[in-house]
Length: 385
Image (tube, rainbow, N blue to C red; front, side, top):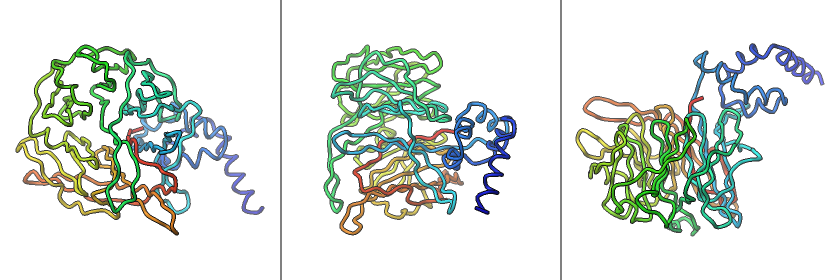
């Protein structure tokens, strides 16, 4: 009781302050601690979710990069769960904390992109039918709302495949990048078999919240069932995976893309990629490569040494983490004859050195979640708030 009373007194003291002063205090605390602080009281939860707090963080220069992870439960319900990277209050270790929201999207095989502080969950399957629905989560308040639906119902997944030995056989759906963001607009290609040149791609202007079709120049772009997209050097790229076809959109016009860059994406199941400060990075076979636009060759990220449990069979995701690279991957182990899935995260600093060399320095890595349920990585996104 003697220890509880001072804690209660301190809590009552800060709650008695005007909101402006509370915002000023909370804005100076890392957002990694916000999930813990939200347990203090209902008023704290309301303050932590308010736009005024994030305006204060911006004014004080206290914005920081936040990581969001979506896991898919491979069961009869195919549940999707969203998490944010947080910090434990006692030992300061980083962990994935689930985001609970009554209006979270339930569509299977949807795509997801980040625009400013908002996550857009696009399309997917609802009752085994392709959906045109779009849901948006405000990462400041962790609340979901409906956005204008697409004009065409779309879903985003590829063929089923199985993991290679020595990992026990397990069924997955491999996600390929589909939707992509350029200048505040979300480009959404494919996702349906009944498409033509006029409706294969549509674009959402997030400022006006309106959808428009974006006509493509040739049907060879969508003749393949799988494709990749990326924004690189201020240009939107779309690549058909199983055909030697790649196009780009620059200043609203379609053009043929660099054949060398096409080969840098990789088609392997365990590949993933991201763009950081206009440099194209790809993870494949436990290595990270980058594309040298000047020399038109793919180079190895130097200084990067294999991380614990990172193997060529690891299903991984990578994302721009405010100029650094966040890499997440799965590890499957047996503990007391029970299969567990461990989700690892690493933060890698990018250093551009002389002679057009890029080095990766692993600043931190660790297990952020462990589960005995059949979860797998679906999406990894980052935003600065």
